[in-house]
Length: 57
Image 1 (cartoon, rainbow, N blue to C red):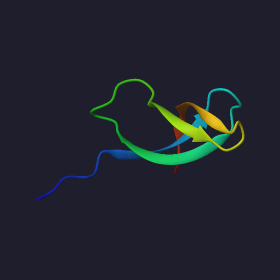
Image 2 (image 1 turned 90 degrees about the horizontal axis):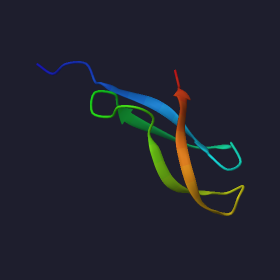
Image 3 (image 1 turned 180 degrees about the vertical axis):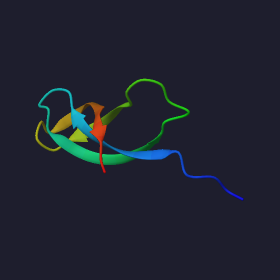
Image 4 (image 1 turned 90 degrees about the vertical axis):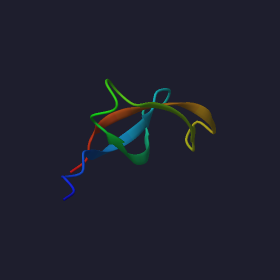
């Protein structure tokens, strides 16, 4: 029997302009620290680093 899912929903915000652009999931057992991805920011109009901001409920 399968256990409870260990993924949590997090918001990604741009490090340059601090705007929230993406919502994604992460596995809290596999990743330590904050999730950092390079994504396109529609406010800055360029590819910037996006950091995990907070958990969404």
